[in-house]
Length: 106
Image 1: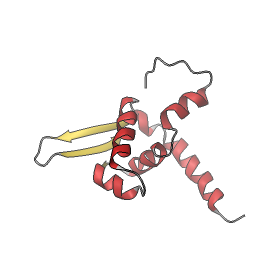
Image 2 (image 1 turned 120 degrees about the horizontal axis):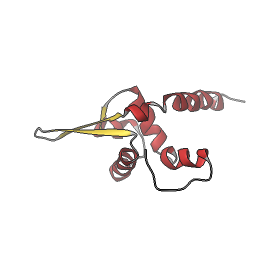
Image 3 (image 1 turned 45 degrees about the vertical axis):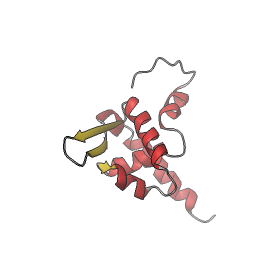
């Protein structure tokens, strides 16, 4: 949400937060609802636990994802989009709509 980094354009600022191979997929899954780590890992073929952890931490640091830890044994942790993260809804929907067009045979 707040960054000391200077950007030369708004697209660069946005891509620095949501860009990369995994972040948009993680946000799309969380846009559908709250998930646990294991659920997300099963939903994202090819992602490693280490990479999912790293991406979730970065999204949390940027104010996009909320991590809620329940004081139970075994530990229960849930991830969801913050209110700020939910503002990306129209962007994710637009990307999904474009993706559907792109996936159709030419």
